Amino acid sequence: MSTAVETQEISSTEHTAAKALSFIPVVGPILAGIANSVLSIFGASHSAAVQKEAATINQVMPNFYSQVQTVIAAANEDAITPSEAIADLTAIQAAYYAGVASIIKQNGKCLPVGGGCAYSSNGQPTTNCASGSTCNAACSIGCTLVTPGIAALIAIIEKGGGTFTFHSMPANGAISAQPAVTVTYKAPGVLTKFEHYLDLIEAKL
Image (cartoon, rainbow, N blue to C red; front, side, top):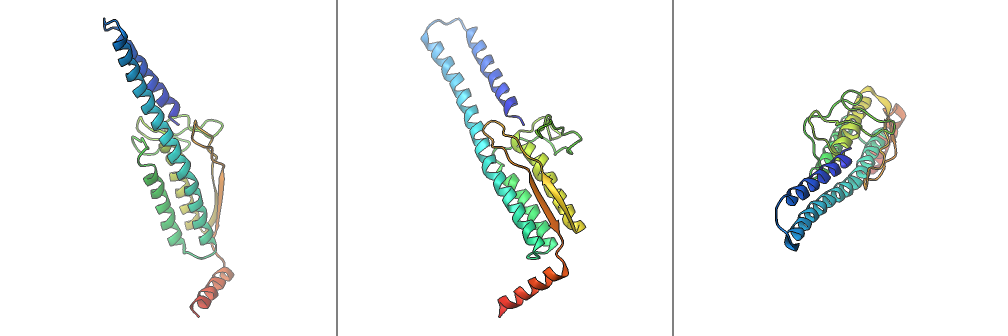
């Protein structure tokens, strides 16, 4: 993810600003005060952005997993149809991207996992996971967990059953670690469908 890269970029910007000021032939506390103010603004802005990114992701990801598990459980119990489950999963994916809209930095489409999107041994992306040059933490999570995960679950539902595991996500600065989440779908059998039918009849009485 790009938190470290962003930190390097802001550090480089701070160094450039300080170096530029050093070439101005002015002596006295005024210039020093201006330099400190400029560097403080850069540092405070970056710190606030990092905190906002972490707070947003730490809120959105648990909601994402909870919603996915709720939909699959409902589909397993025949409380919703496969078509409804697929529509709900598609909406959950859209909700993730809406939730991170204010922080995501993504230039280009998600790359296929295992292709352009490489992993280290702990499951953290080692390269950009979008076809462009920019892909921050929200983008990496979307491209490595959310988008392929929803696609896999939809394929499982269409096939009639299967299991998918969202890989664990290590902590990244203030962004909390997420455990691996395994989801299993099995098309309801005749007995489950009949029991659900009886429940509907009973509810109408």
